[in-house]
Image (cartoon, rainbow, N blue to C red):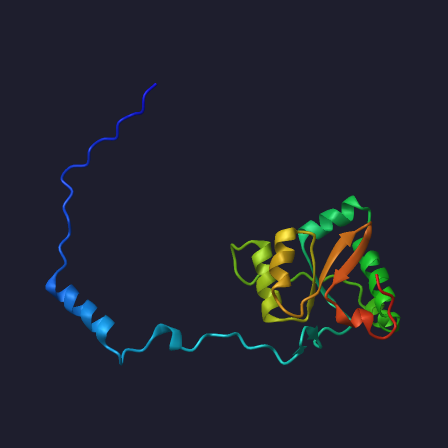
Length: 178
């Protein structure tokens, strides 16, 4: 089997540079007073005042947890009751605040702000606007996206228990380290 031949290109016209384009190019290159694009100011998002380094001071008990459907599925597979599991976990974290959390055990459904978007995008949007939530998920991609947002802790299922990452209050005040 031999190689197939490529068809010949025909009627290919070469473009000529017009006098106006050449004049514009010379002005652009040779003009030293032209502002450089690197000197323009960058748009840097401002850091909220509630964040001190990565410590989020707006996270206070009773905690507000945004739960992903993936987290619910993993909880069912591991036979963990959502409400009791979170209560036990938070009680281990902060035994002083257990009474505040136990008073209001109801779940509140928050509607998505933008219609027609994925749930992951909605969670990330809500967390970037208000950093007073703990995000409960087992989805790797969503965890990766939320880790980029400073001061937002992530709750996930591991070894038939709930674990949390990036909650600096866990190591303060004699709470057990897990």
